[in-house]
Image (cartoon, rainbow, N blue to C red; front, side, top):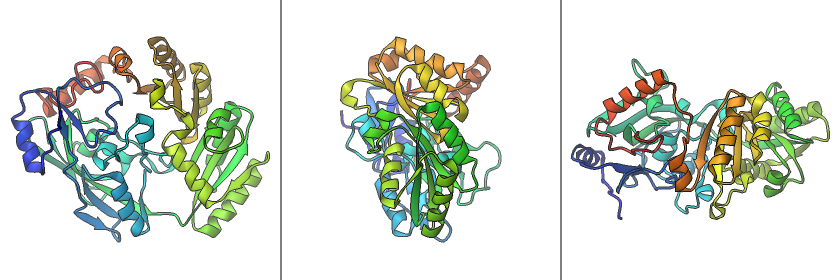
Length: 391
């Protein structure tokens, strides 16, 4: 069925005000297989709400329509030597889509790449939003500077809400200069526990590590590395990167090697996009993301019994394996045992509809969440069932 494509915010508001049935809210539908299948017969796309009405390189601020493709934004920033701080990923290969993600979809899912360990998540760099709630009311929050929030911070509330509270129409983001050079220190390690210890040492060093990941043997081979390795990235001016990589490699010892700029950029782009997981959508496997304290990442991956790799210094555990309820329960138990949480990131519809794709909330939090949902979307028409059954 052809999606509804409102040409502007006013048309979107009128459409939602008059909606009589639930809607599946998307940008370019690149993440439709993420979390649970939406219980709606009609799709609403924000793809027509595209464009960059404001970009001020000197003020490090960019405002874009929610439907603006991520590559368009990245190209605009690159032309001025700047970048999105949170390094949002491109999961087109992971989800088996050929379309580019939109900036609204990135914000709605609060997706961040390897730089999150050093610079924070996408939501942390969101300065302002415009959106339309389930009543058809236009809402806005924030502006063009970081400290501009009084009362409820709608930017952080809507970032990561997956379109269940309101439909984003415009986002304003803080940006930063892109690094002149990128270097990586690659330390061969025997196992995940040793790798995680090396990541902790790298992040605790004074050399400004901006990303830290561990790749087991199978994951390492998928990105052209000879064997399991702990990886630490440094970004800055070329002389500084060369000096700091050399010092860090010397302190880590153990045969640590340095990767040059081109190799480093390709490697971290692959890690950002979960390429080392080797989770071909055609294989029918499920994909999980576990969030644990960095020191617990190796233990959580081992307890899951699945193949995977560690990012964010060990705090993000990527896993792939059989799309069964038994495997899902095993993964959930591994996360809980380490005091962490899980997300069933990608799965066949039958599995995603049958299990909790994120940890159930305690009753008090669930009541607050239900009250927020009722305030923003009292008729329950926005992405029903995306995050939990009946929500």
